[in-house]
Length: 375
Ligand SMILES: *Cc1c(COP(=O)(O)O)cnc(C)c1O
Image (spheres, helix red, strand yellow):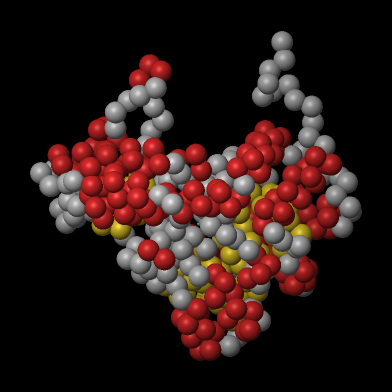
């Protein structure tokens, strides 16, 4: 008996290249795209280790936990790091980036996270990209949490390294990722003696042995199940349309925000300005005296079971990570969870959990506001 997951024909180089072309189309990029065989941390780390070197100076924009990690990698590479940290309830601005570049003209690398699923903010990449391009630094962008949830336009924005993963708004597998690489990024890598070579982290290996070789021979056996899942994920996005997918995420964010504002009970959007709130996930601040982890646990408990045998998918609610666990609730309304039904269920569950703490909530008003805000 053949097993549908185990007894597969090997994935050919042609099929791998075709999937890569479709990822490039999704990014609307004319640059090389490398589909990397691992979770997005692989190209995120590979891109930094390839582009940064002792003697380089990097501007690292921190709007959430990933920016902290990038700073650690950059320092580990011997780069001098200028950290630009903005409070997690807001976004970075082009003016702040321009100011840092003026104060440190030696900056030759800028790392930025587009949207932060962990803190719920999104940064104005088009405007920041203009400033970075005028300065001439290499521009590295983590678009893992924005791809599929909002427009990601690396070529139009002057992004040299745009890293994506399929596991958030694309609704795809977590075990593959991709990076688009501009010609000037390839030049920088090639001139960097410290760039990983003959290594799983190496992007240059893929350039020299896969791309320059005409995409005929893969470097190693590809992560076959993940590649097939990525292909299926791209099929599903094509069927829905990328614009419809991003619109669904924008609606989920708008509905969640409007619903929470109408709910009352002291729960508030964590990101103050709606335009700085990421479409991928909405973060909420709990009222003083309400621990976010306990509120999430109570909300998940309150969610009514449905479906055959009472089994419903768990609501996409989580407390913030680390120090944020006490004060931040994350509504991860991405991928298949970006639906009116999921937003309604999250609002209802949060309302019930807040009511149980003795706070006054108006769940009906929240559901009405959410329905009106869904565009
Ligand atoms: C989710 C995410 C990643 C990938 O990390 P995982 O925690 O492994 O899913 C990278 N960058 C950002 C901004 C993300 O939101």
